[in-house]
Image (cartoon, rainbow, N blue to C red):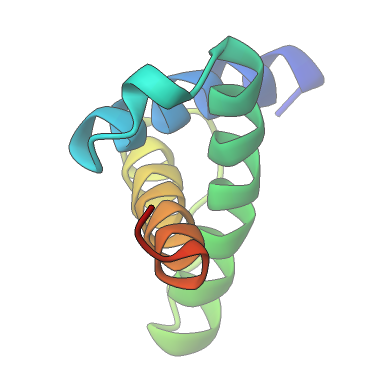
Length: 84
């Protein structure tokens, strides 16, 4: 995948994850992309090392893995930041 694909997939995954985790009002487009890309790495690590799956490319499976990773990332950030 090229860098543009990473940005698009990361932006979509980060945006949907922020809606799921109810943090959309606090996050802008740049943070959505960053969360989505880091979430894709985290989701890829989880699925390849824990589940033994190897999914690559720009497809629905990659999006769902990036979404899973982004949701986990937002959950961990909310867990460590605590409630304000």
